Image 1 (cartoon, rainbow, N blue to C red):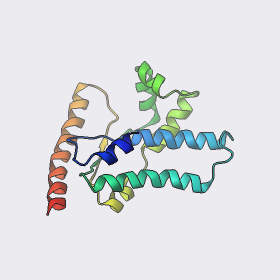
Image 2 (tube, rainbow, N blue to C red):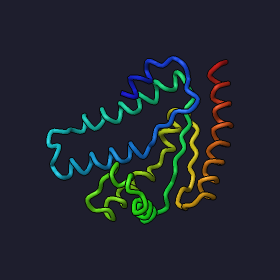
Image 3 (cartoon, rainbow, N blue to C red):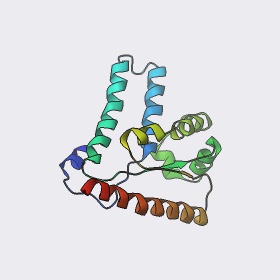
Image 4 (tube, rainbow, N blue to C red):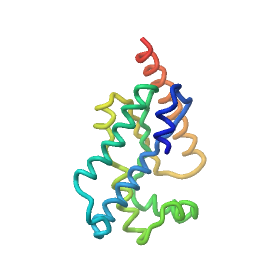
Amino acid sequence: EECNRDVKCSVSRVVETWHFGNSAWFRMRLQKAIDNGDLPGITEEDRHRLGSWYLDAISQHLQRTAILIVQLAVDSPSTILRRRGHNESMKRRLPMEDEEKECTELQHYLQEDLSTLAGNFDIPLLRIDNSNDGDEEIERVLRQILCFTRKNSYRRVNSTSS
């Protein structure tokens, strides 16, 4: 639904976020369903098509707007587990049967190296350590993101408008 909306949009938004965590969650759940035999008919071609869909969406966005990748890196599964323990909304939105095991899997997917993706599309990438909690840490991360966005959005807009 969001991709269809975005295709119809001819002007650039001020800020649009795509959360790579959503992609990580999807890939983790898809693999679990395959491993459990819940999707016996899914083929490698189906998996490739799902990945291609994501890459096609990125390619289409690049034709209309600047894209920047900000990867919030988490140092360990225990960080995810700790944060889930303090956030009931997160537990409802991302239900897990075995918290410890699935936090380990999710952390693995979240730490995927996005430099190849960024390089293939010439998209600036910022990887930030997001392992600590608290207001000061939130401020630190936001400052880094804002600085990165200002610097790279300007560069991307100028290079695509000439």
